[in-house]
Amino acid sequence: MLIEWLVPLITDDISTLKTCNVASIRLRAAVGATAADESGYINQFPDGYAAQSPQVIIVGKIDNISDTSRAERWINRLTSLKSNAKIIIDYTDHHLARNTKNARFYRAALDLCDHVVCSSRMLVQNLASHYNGPTSIIEDPIEVPILAPKLKKNTVPTALWFGHGSNLPYLIDFLCNGYNYSDPARLIAMTNLYPLPEDLTTILDRPNLDNLEINVVPWSIDDMIQAAHLADMCWIPAGVTDPLKSGASSNRLLTALALGLPTAADPLDSYLSFSNIYMNLRSNEIMNAIKNPEPLFEKVKIAQNVISKNYTDEKIRQKWASMIEEEQFALPLEAQ
Image (tube, rainbow, N blue to C red):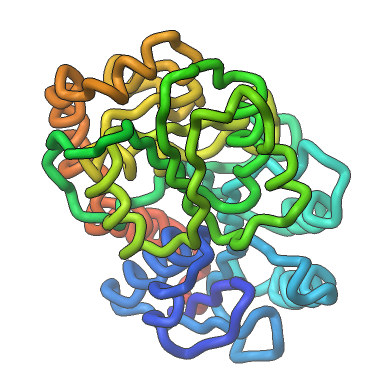
């Protein structure tokens, strides 16, 4: 069986996906394609251009910025394959909540698809008013080593934040409107949007942040692991009230906990099963926690035990393999 993955790059090598700095490619398409490869299926990644006709086509997260004609090309490709292929959409942000080019693409794609995979329960709920076909939930795997929590030797208590540029508005909102601590502290902020645009650095020049040293650095997996060795805890402000991001997966929370960091976060729906593990970011206790994180270490270890059982690359590959196998059996015999 041939599986075509619609992702915003052209390659014939899965390892290209595994090293991509786009999380939706690295943590989803790469994992699913590896599962398919291990099951004996053939993958292709033509970015919607003409290629051999597949039996299954899986639509990853679209990028309309790097190629403004991509949405039209992908829809044309899906339309041409519809009669002979099963179409699956991997839906990881609720783009349909806004009237954007991305939203228009997903509306058109949903009219053609047979199955939607979501990264969280909330995304399935958000999608319900737009799509009534079959859905599956496949979470993101953890891509970092599990590090034992330990006390650091910082002269100034240090927090870590990491995230895609699309998550920066929630960090900035927290710092400008939710951060009210006068004690000296440091924040290491890691993002792909580096250096920060001048308008964002200007916003952060506020009196309530005078005693918070903010170090913005470029994100990479290796650098994030090194930063975790320096940080006392992790802060994760999130778009709880933003329909686009309210269905985000648990990956950032679980990554922070896997890295051995006590974590303060906003309560996304996907974080519910860990609600006794992390602190509410808006709590008045977060400065006490960053100064003395050791009482939280046992909770971090409990979370790490769950992560090592349920959120490894191997476990998530098994979910992709099961979903793909189910779709294969739904194909006509001549297509299998």
